[in-house]
Length: 87
Image 1 (tube, helix red, strand yellow):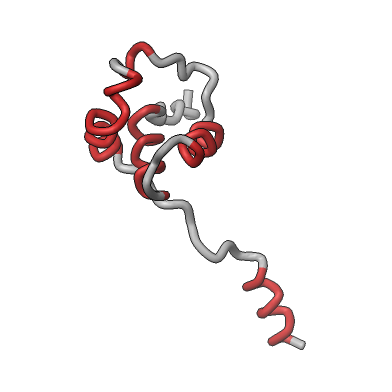
Image 2 (tube, rainbow, N blue to C red):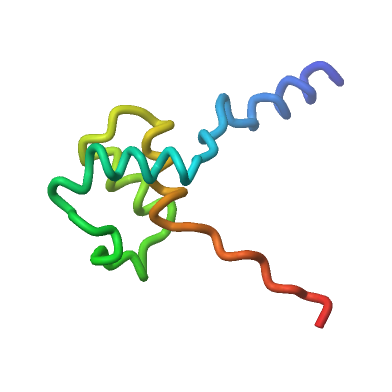
């Protein structure tokens, strides 16, 4: 019974994790692959974009790999530092 429960718990875990993005690599990818059409990244309206939405868009928009997508998301949507909750 314990083995069954342990197996069931393992089955709920994802088989793989989304790759972590590298913003510096994302900047290089943007310069080499995206800037030809999209020009300056400052002109993109990403104010309403979520990492999930942007990843889905990039999946359909000529990115080569999961890692490239993660790097571009890290570059285009930098995470703001967490708010200090001690105040």
